[in-house]
Length: 634
Ligand code: AMP
Image (cartoon, rainbow, N blue to C red):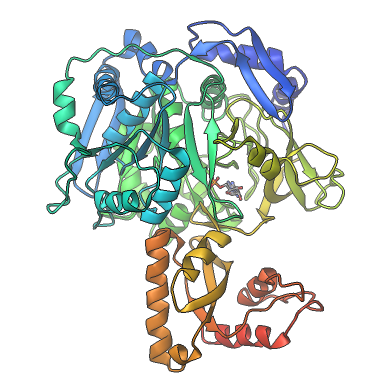
C-alpha cells in the first residue's frame, strides 16, 4: 500500500473537517457553509451545513465563462443511428427550456419528478433542469415494468413525469409510454401531468387529453427561457433513486446537494483523474447510480465532455466502444465486468484496430470482477484497469485505487483500498469485532458516512436506521451487506452479499421481489428464488415454484407452457432483467421446522455444492425434489 495514498486517506479520517473543507473548494458556493459536519443526531450526517449551492450550476453554468464552446454532452445511438452533441452553452440553453416548462406546469422546489426515459440527451436535460429549480428527480430505469414503476410513483408521489414514446435495445423497441400508461392506471398517486418526448418510435402512441403533453411543443414555447438557479442549502434533497433490498418494497435512496457535489468533484479529481476539457465515457444507464454520478453529474462538474451511448457493446460489432473512445478521444472510461465478459468472447482485434492513445484508464464496478476477466482486459487494453466497489447508497466509490494521489499496484480481482472519507472496517458477523488478515467478514463503515452518501431513505428515517445501522447489536455501524476480506498487503476483496440480494449483470435485485412476482401467477402457491452463478452475468435468478394444481405440470408440455407464462408474469411485474433463468416446479419447498425456506441449501444444490447443515429441515423429500428438478438442467 502506497505511502501517499495512506497519508491522504488517514487525513480524511482523522481530520474530516479540514479534509472536506479543502475538497469543498472544488465546487462553487453561493453562500459559504457555517460548519463542515453536524453529527449531533447519529447516524444522520449533515455536511456543509448552511452552505448554499446548486448541482446544475456546478455542472453547467460555472463552465460557461471558459468552456461555453466546449462540448459538454455527446449523444451517440447505434440503435437509431443518431449523433448529437451540445456545448456547455447549448446545454445551458436546453436545461433552461426544460426548467421553464417544468415551472410552467407548476413544478416547484421540493416537488418530485419521475424521469422514465431512454439514454437520450433530453433525459440529461430533464435531470439537470430538476436540479436547477430544486425539484427532486427520481429516475426509474427503463427496463422496469409498469408494476415496479407504479410502486416508485406511489412512494415518491411526483408532481410530474417525463418520459419518451420509446427506446431501443439491441434493435428491439421498448414502448415506454405504453408502460407509463399502465403504471398510471396501477398507481394510487399518479402525477397530474406527463411530458412525452416523441422520438417517432411508437406510431400508435395513445395520448390522454389534459394529462399528456408534448416535449417539443413545450420546448418551442420556452426557446429563450432564462431560469436562474435556485440556491439550495447543502442538505436539501437532490434526488431519490430506488434500489432493491431484502424486502419486496424498494428503498428510495435520498441524496443531498452539497455533499454530493463535493464528493463527486473530489472523486473526479483523485480517483478518475478527469481533467477539464477531457472526455469521459461511462457505459451505464441514467437509470442507475453510476449513470447519475458518472454520466451526468460527475464529468460535467469536472468540466469534462460526457458521452451518452444508447446501444449495446457488440452492435454493429464488438469494436463499437473502442471506436467511440477513438473518435471522441475519451481519456477516462467506466464500465461493468459483465460487459467485459461479453466482449471477451470476441477477438481482441476489434479493440486493437482502434487508436486508444487518449485512454488513461478504465474503471469497472457493479459486481465482482473475476481475475481472468481483469487480466484479459488489462492485457488487451495495455492500460490500468481498476476494479472499484460501491453501492447505490454511497453514490461514489467505497473501495478503490486513488491514482490521482498515487498509482498503487493493481491486484487482480481486488478493488484495492478504502476510499478517502470512509472509515471502512471488516467486522465479524457474530460480535462485530474486527476481522484479521484473510478472514471473511462484513464490510462496514463507521459513521458518519462521508459526503455524497445517502442522507436517509425517502420519507422513512426509521427504515434508514433499521436497514443500514442495525446489523450489529451495541455498535452503530453502516452495513454494506457484502462479505469481504483483506489480505496481508491491505488489499480488499469482495466475496458477495450477506443477504438474499442477487447481483445480475451489475444490477441488484431482491429475491423477495422476484418471489412476489412469480407468486402473482394464479397457478403458483409459493416459491423460492435463489441467485446462481452465471458465466457472463455473474449471477442469475433461479426459481422453484409450488403449483396449486399438480395436474398443470403432469406433462412436459404443461410444465413448459406454465414456465413461459410465469416468466411473462415476472417480465410484466418487474421487467425482463428479473426474469429467472429457469422456473422449476415442485410440490413443496425445503423449509425449517419453523417455516423458513432454506434458500442457501437450494442455492448450494443449484451451484453443485454441499447443501450444508440440514438437521432443521421439515421434510427431506423437498430437497430431493429440488435435486430432481435440477437434474433436468438449470
Ligand atoms: P448497486 O447498488 O445496484 O450498485 O449494487 C451494489 C452492490 O453491487 C454491492 O453491494 C456489491 O454487492 C456489488 N458490487 C459493486 N461493485 C462491486 C465490486 N467492484 N466488486 C464486487 N461487488 C461489487
